[in-house]
Amino acid sequence: MPVSAPKGLQERLDPYLAIIGPMVMILMILAFMGVAEPARYFRLSNLNIILLEAALYMPLAMAMTFVITQRGIDLSIGSVAALTGIIMAFAIKEFGFPAWIAVLLGIAIGGIFGLINGLVITKFRVPDLIGTLAMDLVYRGFALVLAKGLVLARFPDLITDIGRGRLPGFLPIPVIIGILAFLIGAFILRRSWFGRYSIAIGSNPEAAEMTGIAVDRYKVYAYVLMGAMAGLAGVMLTGKLNAIQATSAPYFNLHVIAAVVVGGTSLFGGRAYMLGSFAGVLLLSMMINALVTLRIEFFWQSVASGVVIILSVAFYTWLQKKDRDGAKGLLNAFTTPDNIKLMKLGGVLAAGTVVLLVIGSLFSTGSVPSG
Image (cartoon, rainbow, N blue to C red; front, top):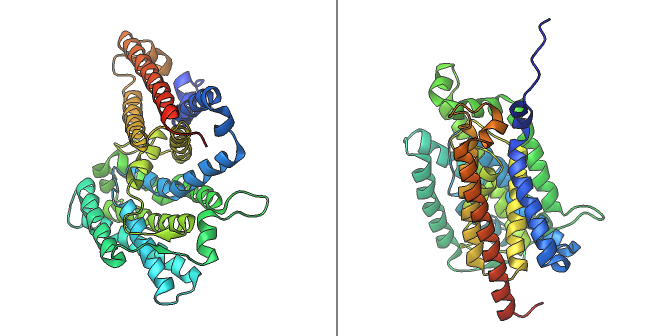
């Protein structure tokens, strides 16, 4: 039998590249908060807040991983979550549906909305970005029409348990749901035809179609899964707040896309890391919680999310082209003259960001009373 050549550094690191970036940033947040606000950030109640916040986005990030892997995007998930939550609320309050049937109804209707998105993209040949953005307006409009400005509140215990309940002596129920979603997603990605075909479609749609893969059908499947998980997120959000309204979940799409991209899934398709998406969700929840703990205004949270998206996309795009100048492997790619200059610039930008965070926290601390 032929003896395989020993793996180089690049080959050994490839399976872990998706997790390295988020983990480094998580460690940086922990180190910074350990100096700035250790008492408030590391208390158990705050850890519970971070987990509950992350859990809301876990099913969404799992499904978005498949959509983005196929070179797609879904900007309608926030509106779908709000509309399915409102439909579930009306089913319980106006029509007397049992809570468990209303939950299944919400998830199923989310899947139908995902089916509509998929058909708009594959049958009408509307680009994913435009198609889902237009459907976002449609779903949000229907939510506004149905709710008529009302806030629907006070739901059965099953709904609130899904959103914020806790098993005795165990993790919160939403966290369990989110972790299960990722485990199922990882199994589908690595062990099923749907996962393999999703990667093939994202790598080269034309070649995938020539090999006999029904590209349009599997794209629709991905959007159906995305819609169903948005419906589940709508149920979880309703239970978490014990209320729902038409304007709920306005930034779900930004947060979820950011988490998936930070986790190493390529916006250009063909590369997916479910563990990376999980780490990305945790990272963004920790980052936003850190900004809240530092009493930095909400608007800066959007700024931080946008910066993280840009840096992550730039980093992973660079990794894909690391051999373009004759560099062999990851280590040599980092030591080319151009990339040394880029790393120095990145260091200056990172230092400037930390300085801005410190200044913002000092000014905010002075204007907002500590609690």
